[in-house]
Every structure is written in structure tokens, then in C-alpha cells.
Image (tube, rainbow, N blue to C red; front, side, top):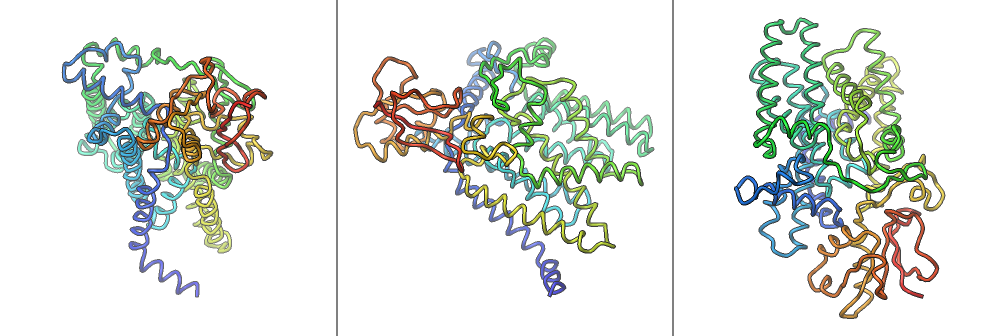
Length: 512
């Protein structure tokens, strides 16, 4: 029976791969309409317009814009896709669809990357599933206009890096240099790819895969193309490249003034501790994935000291170690969980795959060899079920390490910090209150205002939105617990809530 099943899978591998990506595409297109609006979406639209005005010569506002060092390439793509729609609801739905499609294309490329690295179609499909079925990544892939697009671009960079490492020629250095420049345009950490490439080039020189002369020439060509690409696609550099790059590297334009909830304590930006990123990664990643990451790390170390790393191992280990190492040294000012370093996740999946591939070579232990892929398949199924249950709030997934009592994650970690749950809260109120004018006060005004914009026109025209503490007797008060973990005082009566599992991420109140 097992032989027949194996023969079936081998015969129809291509069809199964196509079916997987077709089903994912269909699911994504349908689900893209279900999400609320994240805080940064209006800011990115504003960045796109300011950039357009500067490039077309309409005005020079870009030169004094506080977010001028964040490239607008993806924002411009969203602007182009949404501009045909005059109604705010259609406009935002188009943005979410394009955001998903951009990530979807990168999953196709990730599958191709795994094949380039020597994995079979089945192993490449497994690795792609590990990339897609991470609840945090999955949720953000529909509405996050910054971090998941950068993750997608980093997959492009890893692919061109692999081409360059496997065939170090001017033909492969050209696209890799251009993509490396674009990575910095997308986000400043894109410069990590430049460092990764330098280490890979040194390894090729040490391994005698290129001569010193060729390494020098390829390195110079790569650096030139990366710099030209950066200059060409980041318009703020056009008037003063050196001065703007200096400001860019210092990240002095950062003006975030919120606070971060971590292990039950709130921290201002300057006080966020070094363990912020690893803690958030650990508590928001499925436990089985963490085990696979540990296995992959052991596999790479074992291969390194037992028989030496092959080309794939060198690329994977270099990419992750250089990235994490530089982040540790630089200690960047990041917040909102680990979303700023989502770009590390494709490299983390590559490490996981090293562990699975290592166990697969244990031919003498058939039980372990076939048992691990079976366990991984079961874990993926369980995670997929969790994603379906959480939808459309996959991005607030926490594993059991975050705490199991009711509301434990909300007491210790950020939840719906971008306020997407305001959409559901508004929809519930409007479905149960037929008044023509409803006054609603909110804790977080910006995301509330944006989520109001994604409602049908006839619904949003009924709502008068007010800042908290405006001195007006409101009909409702809504909180997404961004700055507080507890409901408002006893003078308000709870009438609605948005829950993820046992955790309340949004609550609606009325005056008693």
C-alpha cells in the first residue's frame, strides 16, 4: 500500500504542486476582503503621493518629510492599483488584494529557490508551506504594507544570491546588484544583503571557486550596480546623496512615540531591552517550528565539523548568521513585536529544511526518516487549522509559552496594536443600531478612522468618530487595548467584544 501511495505521489507531483499554489491563490483572493485596515496603510499612501509630487516636480515636500528615507516603490504599486477606485472601501480592498498577490508571487519564487538549492519538489513544497503557514506572516501578508513586502523582496535577494554563488559571473552579479540596491530602498536592513554577499564572495575566493582578480571585478561590479540601483529608486538621494545617506544610516528620522508591552511591562522606544525580538519570535511561532529550527541548527553545526558544509549549507548559514549577527551588534530600534525582522523568516525556514533533509539521510533508521516528515505534515495541518480558526486575526497568534489563562497574552504582549479589529466592532454596532447618527469614541483614533473607511458608504456616513476624552457624551466607546490592558472604568457597560481564543482583543462599551 505504501509503495502504491509513493508511486502515486511521484507520478502526480507536478499536478499536486500546481494544485497547492492554485488553492492558496484562491484562498488568498477570497480572504483578502476580510481584513481590517492597519495603521500604516494611510501613511504609506501619503508617502507614495509625496514621492510622486517630488518626482513630477509638483513640490519638494519629500525633502522635509519625516519618512522620506523609506522607499516608496511598493507604496507606488499600491497607489497605482487602488487609484482607479474613488470609494475608500474599494480602494482599500484593492490594496489588500495587491499586498497579498505580491507575497504570493514571492512564495512561488521561494519554491523555485528551494529547487535551486537542490531540494526535491516535495521538499520544496514542504519548505514553502512552512513559509506560508506561519500565523504571524500569514496574517500580515494581507495588510502590512512594509514588512511582508520587504520579506518578499528578501526572497528575491536570496534567489539572486544563490544564482551568484552557484555561477559567479557578471551575468549573475548584474541582477543581484540591482536587487540588493532595491532591498535598501524597501527597508534599511536590506543592506544586510550587501554584507552577506561580501562574505559569500570571500568564501568563493577561499574555496578557489574564483580567482582574486575575478573576485575583485565581480565585487566591484556588484557594488556599483547596488549603489546605482539604490540611487535610482530612492528619489530623496537625488539632491544630496551623501547627506541623506548619512541621515538614513543614523535612522534619526524615527519619531515613534508609543510604548511596547513585553513580558507584562511597558517600555518606551529607547528602553526596549535586547531580548525583545527573540522573546516575541519564540512566543508567536508554532512550537513545532521552533523544534525544527533547533534541529536545523544542530544539523548545520554537525555538518560543519563532521564533513564540512556543502554549497547550500554555506549559503543558508552565512545568510542567517550574518543577518542576526549584525542585528545583534547594531541593536536596531524596533517595536511592534518582531515584524521589522520578518525578512529573517525565509532564512529560518531554510535552516529548518536543513534539519529535515539531514534526518532524511538516516536510511538506517526508517522510522525516524519517515516519521519526521509525517510529524511535520501533522504540525502544518494543526497550524493551518489554527489559522482558519483565528481568521482574520492570524497576526495575534501566540503559542502556549505566552500563557494559557484567559487574556494572558493581552496582559503580557501586544495584540491588535494596528487596530484592525475596529472594523468588526463597527460592523457589529451598525448591524444592531439603526440610528442615523451614532457617536463613537475610540482609544486609537487613526486605525479607527481607517477601518471606518473600509465600511460600505451608507454605513460609514452614520458614524461620528471622536477622540477619547473629547467631553461629548458618546453612544459607544471602543478600545483595542493598545495603551491599556484593562477595560475602562465602571461608569461604562460592556456590550461587545472581539475575541481570539479566550483573549479579548477589542471591546465595546456604552455609558451605564
